[in-house]
Image 1 (spheres, rainbow, N blue to C red):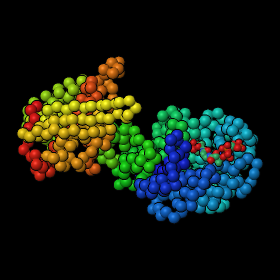
Image 2: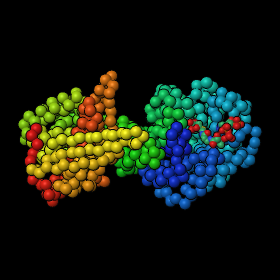
Image 3: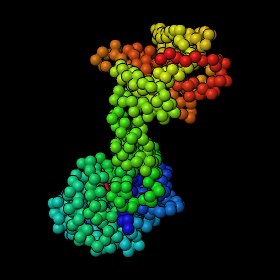
Image 4: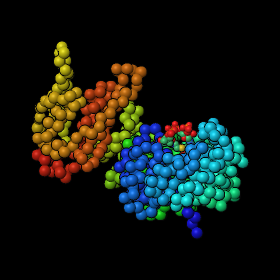
Length: 537
Ligand SMILES: CC(=O)SCCNC(=O)CCNC(=O)[C@H](O)C(C)(C)COP(=O)(O)OP(=O)(O)OC[C@H]1O[C@@H](n2cnc3c(N)ncnc32)[C@H](O)[C@@H]1OP(=O)(O)O
Ligand SMILES: CC(=O)C(=O)O
């Protein structure tokens, strides 16, 4: 039978101890729903004794119907020198209305004498009396053995006495914490093995990522008997973060054969990770293992060639199994296979064009050498392919444009662009103002084309980025302009490179418009200018 590992999510508590992470009560409630849906067993909502926001969360979450997860509160053992029933933190946990609680207690003697500034015996009493008090009040109690691994390395007898005190007082699970995140997998394995041998209650693991080993250490603990795993979505957490459940889950379930969440929910991992990044207002790291945009993005030609034959040549798991997808990138490191793959994605059968894919590759490599970066501008790449195949329509041609920037005295800058284009056999000549030269050029181009292609009103520039390519040349440097455009439904990116920023912007701008027209050729039939010729490659 498949063995079960229980998941305890602390995104809403330890996750918010990460720099830059702050969640409102509404954010926390939204995340609770998603965690419950995917099958997390315990959701630690916060520390009721810490702040009014967490108290409000526990009030509001009482009205939320969950299918699976238990909402859990967090807190510490009682303060030194007072009875547990008089401890304000423990009282607040009881009033929070939860059925389960995790309380952390000291297991490293150094922390007892230096941080708590109390005696080793008093700390053992704090642990056992706090656990007992919460148990007597009907709660499921998880004891988080703070700094357990460091404590065990310095004074194993005391560390063991501390967790045995929690067990004797009735704790339902003892979670061993690598609080400073500095332990190595082999240390975790040996220590967890020893603890599992000595305790009768289930053992859990809670790892921090200071040595970049939180996931590895968590897996090592499970290998040697831990069956309760604590972590956060996307690895948010104090300092360098906590064990990332988004990586822990597929490793345990797909590779080590444990069951953590229902099999059919595995495909939701990618969207869960993105959702939590979004709510937490974090930019998702593209190289995040398993779920990042680049996690299955193949760039090197050798890789793409092999992946097309057998995906497992360069993929450790099928991307779809966790809801991600394979991508192929175009760059100077591409081979024919990259181009064939992309062409197939766009439904072009390059095989019928003989050696064209080689010519396309040669062109890309040459352009990338000039400063182009097609990986970030797939629309420009698609135009390049279409043009090379002789299938790109000649929507308009430029006669010339002029851009004027004027400043007189204390007046603000004014900018104007004049443009002359040919659309079929007609000439169009317009001018427009803008809040800068590229904006004025964009306005003038649109104004000129609007009469022939009214659909241009539906598209707009959604992002504009400039990067200086060879800074050593200062103001004579080459610049790369990347433009992102949208029609409200789709987004596409185009590129231009030149030593002149206006010229680079122009190339990116016209690619953006040409791409839009190319993708909506059916709609172009209703446009006054529909009599298009193809562009010579
Ligand atoms: C390993 C972890 O991640 S533990 C969780 C850490 N998270 C947080 O600290 C976030 C929430 N914390 C808070 O809101 C506040 O720190 C509070 C409300 C808990 C306490 O605030 P204050 O009463 O002002 O105390 P302060 O934060 O300055 O110091 C912590 C106190 O807790 C004591 N303490 C620390 N661990 C424990 C423990 N396991 N059991 C009992 N007391 C403890 C410390 O000795 C210190 O006591 P002192 O004030 O007598 O020196
Ligand atoms: C309990 C906890 O968060 C820790 O020891 O890291």
